[in-house]
Length: 311
Image 1 (cartoon, rainbow, N blue to C red):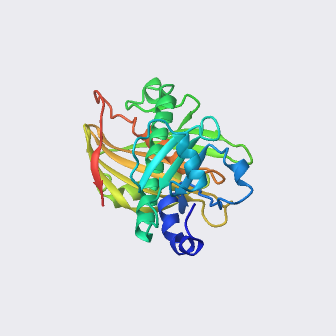
Image 2: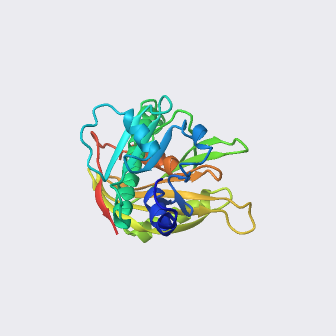
Image 3: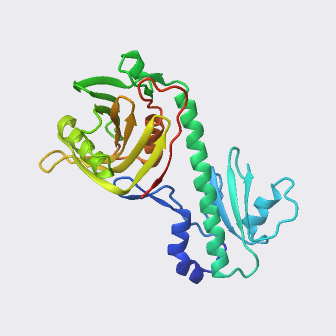
């Protein structure tokens, strides 16, 4: 990163905000980890073989010029610009170059690195979509197999139990001691009128399910904003937050996402919760979002999409 040390220190918070966006799971967690390395550091000769590298500097800086020399058909480049070049120092490597103009000003550096952050986030989300599509191609309709009325596509490894009338729990557990991951999806039904149609009503319903069917009973803490949308079968309210074990029990917590949906036969709540204490949760929660999106009301026909807003 060819930025004077004093300016780099001054820009530190802005650089981290651009390159390490955060998402709330059980707390604000960075989606990416970015480590700085001085261009003159002896470790560079080994670290340059990593799969993902970001170079920040001008076209005449040694590492930047070396990367640019490996690019094909770049044509005329007018900095500031963001470029991505494959296989510079290693196969299957992507080197992102934040190309600065000579004597770049503070605002130019911040703006360019903000663009880099957006590129990284967009590509990561696209990779998750592809991974979800590949995974989803092998999912099965667990609900239809059991004549539950609704439809819900999940990986085949999910187990099933129905602890109470109108409550269906699907769970997949990888309890490897070093990094356990437990994914649980609960589908519950109530007649229209039994639940207040509001974000508070959805949270209260989710809280009751957590208390009654959590092992041990769960504490539910919602985090706004709620999502209000519409799908082909009716209205949708989405809420997110954190579930946790109560005081006196083994400490455990994780994120949840729940959707209260209006169907022709009544209201359904689909709740997805995650327990993954030693694992980054952003992509795992994205997978759970994908699973919830496969829910279909009884007798619904065709594909459904959700449109709405957060508030």
